[in-house]
Structure formats: structure tokens, C-alpha cells
Length: 471
Image 1 (tube, rainbow, N blue to C red):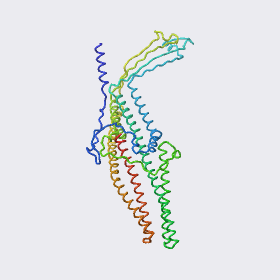
Image 2 (cartoon, rainbow, N blue to C red; image 1 turned 135 degrees about the vertical axis):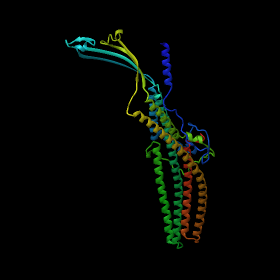
Image 3 (cartoon, rainbow, N blue to C red; image 1 turned 45 degrees about the vertical axis):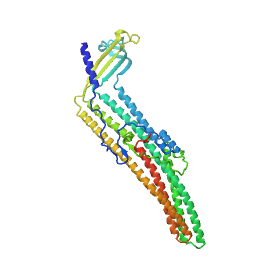
Image 4 (tube, helix red, strand yellow; image 1 turned 45 degrees about the horizontal axis):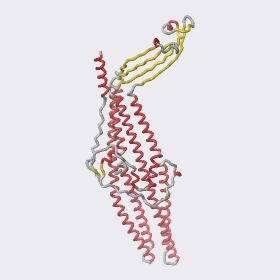
């Protein structure tokens, strides 16, 4: 008898150690050994430090704004709440693996017929045919569903994977919000630089208009020279007004990103762009693995894989152990005496013989969800590769473009100075001055624009890599 009990216990233990469904393996993506841009192959890594990458721009105002957004942004708070929900779900999935213990107490009086009263405990007789029965009860109970096939453990595995994916979603939200703040801030500072340029341009155009009017009054210039100078001045003033509008819009957007109303934030104008950090010449592909969206997609594949095991477990019967013990009597004062004691214990085995193919359908759903998650993971990795290569290409090409724009702006200003001198000497018409002024202003704007785009491309690269490449 003892040997039989040990054999049954060993058999149940072996069953409890197995789990239905496939074990998880990370899907193959088919990454190239060498990336198209300046990347080197490396071993994949799930977790690498990201660091406060926005401090690379050496701008205290920008750092304060990003830190404020990380604390007060409402999108981040939603993601944080969703993560806490996912963690709580893990707790409920873990609790199912443990026994459930409860207590209950009740007291009641009932009236029964004489025949039924013979089966109960009689107390106060009311008539020949009826009796009043008092029943007091205090019970403790316990139940435990044995996870013979690993179905509950697969559910716990799925919950843990979903919680890890939710944590990655939170990290992705923080990374996205920080990148958006940096992008808007760079554009705002570019507008500050542009406003300074336009302000000095308006002053210069006003001076040119005054000179042209004096020349017209002296009879050495035509009226069309005056009107052309007025057009140039008015156009520059309109551009300056439009830049003020664009800056206000960006300032309002940054305020909302930092969890404040638009009127709650004022960024003092400053006509300088943040520092453009040096980009490492060699970047490891391991940096790509710390992107939170890639990690979240991979964890969801793991959760979907575990759900296949949950669906498989529905084909097997469930075994539960239940036990209860307590007292039942007619008087609370004597309830806990030995004659009133009662108890029960026993296993319960339950299984479904026919449900119209519902289990087969659930299994098909689990497999289809897994295939969808694998496809989503691979697509996320491909998009991540594309975003990195796009940012690297932009940085490389924009560096060349900035060099060309710098030379163009220098030449345009030299041409403008020469043309203005020629106009004062009477050798060229004012139309030549207008053309030279427009060319110089356009070249300056192009230079400011490409410098802003380089900073934004750098921020896009850091976002694509999940943070600072050298934390």
C-alpha cells in the first residue's frame, strides 16, 4: 500500500513537470551579415543600457524639457498604467497554481413538515405536522487544481511575456516622446536662428529702401527701384511674421509633451542650435536589439507561443483536490463539540468529451495568432533596419549638403556686396540687387535648414538604435 502511494505521487510529479505545447524559440529574421551602411555584425542582445541620450546635445534647456516630459507626459503615464495592469495579470496567473483556502459560517431557521423534520434536528414543535429547524454551520475549505499538463504554467508564461512586452511598450513610449521633444526643440531653435537672420535682413532691406528713395529723390534712380525695394522689404517682414507663428506652434506642442497647457511654458529665444554630437564610425548591430519595439514584438511572439500550450491543454482532463472540515449543529454554544464535527476530502476529474469542435477552433486560433506575432516581429526588425539606414544615409548626405550650402551662402553674400557697390556706382540696375538679395537670403535659409535636418537625423539615428550608442 505504501509503495503504491509513492508510485502514484511520483507519477503525478512527473506529469506536473511536463507542459503541453511547443517550447519557445526566437524566430529567425534572416539579418544580413553586414548592413548596407556603416554597421558591423555582432551577437544579439536583448537588454543594453540606453542612457539619457539627449544630454549628448549639450543643451540644459533641452535636457530639462525631456526630463519633464518623461515625468509628466500623459502618453507615458498611460503606458505605465498598462504595464502595472500586465504585472497584476501575472499575479493572477501565478495564484491559479496555488491552493485556494476559504472559510464560511452560516446560521438559519426553517420550518419543515413532519416527515421532513425526521431528517433534521427538531427543536421547538409548532404542530403535529410542522417543526422549526435551526442549523448553525462553520466550515473551512480548500481546493487545488493540479497542473498535470502544464496548461496553467503556459498561461503564466504568456502573462509574463505580455508583462515584459508591456514594459518594452513603456520604454518605447518614453523613447518616442523624448525623440519628439528633441525634434520639436531643434526646429524651434532653427526658427530662432532664422528669426535673427530675418530681423537683420529686414533692417538691411529697410536701409536699402531708404537709400533707393534718396537716389530716386535725387533723380538718379527710377521709381521701379523703389517699388522693388518695397517688395523685398515686405516679403522679408512676412517671412519673419510666419516664423513667429511656426515657433509659437512648436512651443505649444512642447508644452503639451511635457504635460503642461500651452500657456504654461515659455522657451526664451536663443539664436543658436544645439551641438551636433560626433557619430561613431562603427556601430554594432547589437545596438539594434535594445530597441524597445523590437523587444516588445519578440516578447509577444513568446506569449503567443505559450498560448498554443494553453489551447493544447484544453484537450486533457483537469484534476482537482478538494477538502473541507468544520462543524454543524443546532446551537452555537455547543457547535464545536466533537459530535457536530464533519469533513470531506477527495479528488475530482473532469474532461470534455464533445463540444462541437470548439477546442480545435481554439487551437487553430492560437496557431494563427502565433504566426501573426512572428510576422509582426520580423516586420518590426525590418523597419528598424530601414530607420537606421535611413538616418545614417541622411547624416552622410546632409553633411555634404551643409558643406555645399556653406560655400553657396558665402558666395551669395560676396555677390550681394559686389552688386550693391555696382548699383551705387550706377553700373547695374536695382533688379540685380534684388536678385542678389533674394539669392543670399535663400542661401542662408538653406544653410539653417540643413543644419536643423542634420540634428534631427542624428536624433532619428539615436532613436532607431534605442538610445546613446556609447552610454
